[in-house]
Image 1 (cartoon, rainbow, N blue to C red):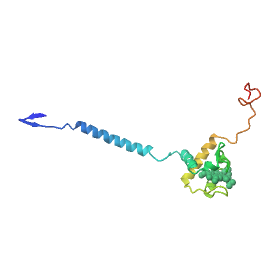
Image 2 (image 1 turned 60 degrees about the vertical axis):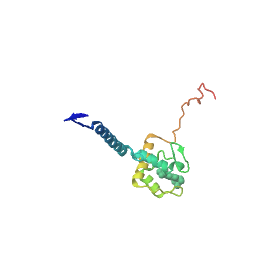
Image 3 (image 1 turned 60 degrees about the horizontal axis):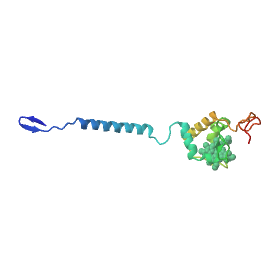
Image 4 (image 1 turned 45 degrees about the vertical axis):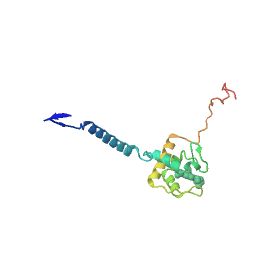
Length: 145
Ligand code: HEC
């Protein structure tokens, strides 16, 4: 409240209002940025996209990876190095007597292949035979069953 030439005038202090508006705008812009970057539906790494497709298309109902999964089709742990990319693409496009053909885009096929390649590069299946002692089972083990 100010006294000016006998009149009383009121002045609104706009500063807090301005600060709040600025804060809200900033919050809104950061939210937009986070949504644009992280809010995409699903992962962007092709290997993870491939894993997602593996699950969504139920490959696992017929195929196992490192022995886990279905057994109507062969275990695909090392399909990438055993069969190669072209063969996998062919099977996906054409299916077989016991496997349905899948209508997948090239990008989706690439992602599935990237996933199978990643599994192939980290795992070997079936397991190699092993003659050494197995904990709890070898003759020399003190633990009897
Ligand atoms: C209904 C069962 C079924 C489903 C679902 C299925 N497959 Fe198959 N798949 C098979 C069978 C069975 C074979 C072996 C070929 C044959 O005997 O006809 C095979 C073969 C393959 C092969 C060739 C393996 C080799 O070593 O010859 C690949 C690669 C493959 N499938 C990938 C996939 C992928 C990826 C998916 C999911 C998108 C999938 N399959 C879904 C049954 C299935």
